Length: 87
Image (cartoon, rainbow, N blue to C red):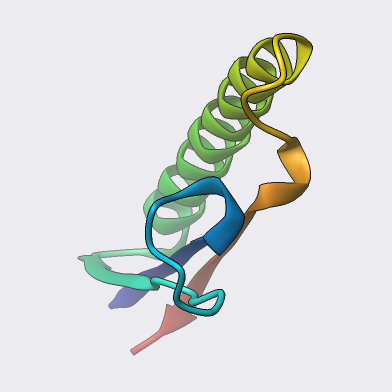
C-alpha cells in the first residue's frame, strides 16, 4: 500500500487585500491510498503537472493585473509538495 500526500499552501500579502493581518500560509493537506507504487507515482506526476499549470495561470493573471496597477506577483506566495510514501 502506498500513500500519496500533497500539501498546497498559499499566502496573500495584506497589501493585496482588505485584510490587514500578517502574511499567513493557508495549507491544505490531502492523503490518498494506492495499491502500488506505480499508481501512486502516476497520480503524483499528474498532480504536480496540474499544480504547475494552475500556478502559471495564476501568475499570468496577476501579471495582467500588474499592467493596470492593480496587483503584483510578489503579493502572493504559492508552494506545494507532492510525495508518494510506503504505508
